[in-house]
Image (cartoon, rainbow, N blue to C red; front, side, top):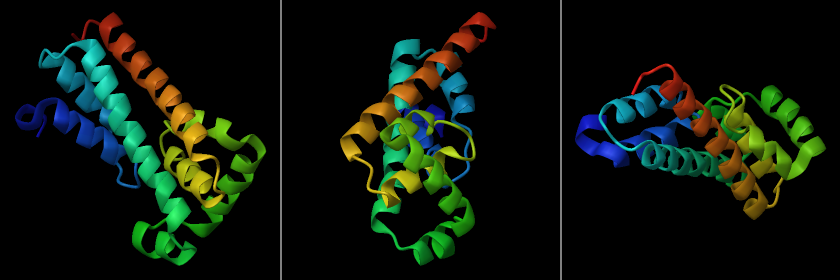
Length: 146
């Protein structure tokens, strides 16, 4: 997919990986770098895609009913309630951690459920995800992957 769609494919893949669809975006980040795309372009596209996906999860929490989240997205109510309690403690700052595997989606959904300020959520989510991809790109560069 990445070969055919290029950076747009990277964007879509990173967007999907930030929703309830399990997906490893770092592998595609490495693939894009190996294909010769510039590290800054790849980092920015991956960050924008992942942030878009995170905001989709946030909107799911904002717009969906508990029953829909459980039935259609297989999000367990108990896990989401625990995450909601943690988010209540940190507010929008929790968005910095939406890049985390497994719990990042739950954080974003819980933030939407709690109606955390969407603009602060977007900004802090972007910063957290940018730091993630900068670290991944840097690590790949140090190991000589590209």
